[in-house]
Length: 187
Image: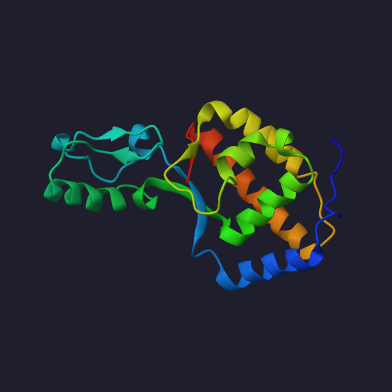
């Protein structure tokens, strides 16, 4: 794929999007993380209690089921410091606030590239506030291809291009962790 260039976007609205992102920061938006595999590797500081009915959930997190509130709180205290990764989160990165996610999505959609980035647009940038979902492992090879393609895209506006580069780098970090640990990327 040849490098795309976002010359058609109105620089005034782009600058407003970027300025809003800088003012608001990452307070309301999308963050992504990958859970560690320390439990499976036996790298937890103390053994979990048998009555917790501990299991690794489909998102890679350490979870329990059917516990009363007191026992859930006991598990949560253990889980928070069970290994070197707080609450089992191996890596966590902000994707962006509502304005930045919208800007990235608009950039890809405005240049007729929806079909080139279906995983990024359908699982990562579909809105600026989603959570509780993930990019499943079976989509990781396609995600990697899309991130590699996106790395070849450029923008004329320097601050927008910088945000795009940052997003690509974030996705590369998340993908590498997910691939290494055989875990999905969670939001």
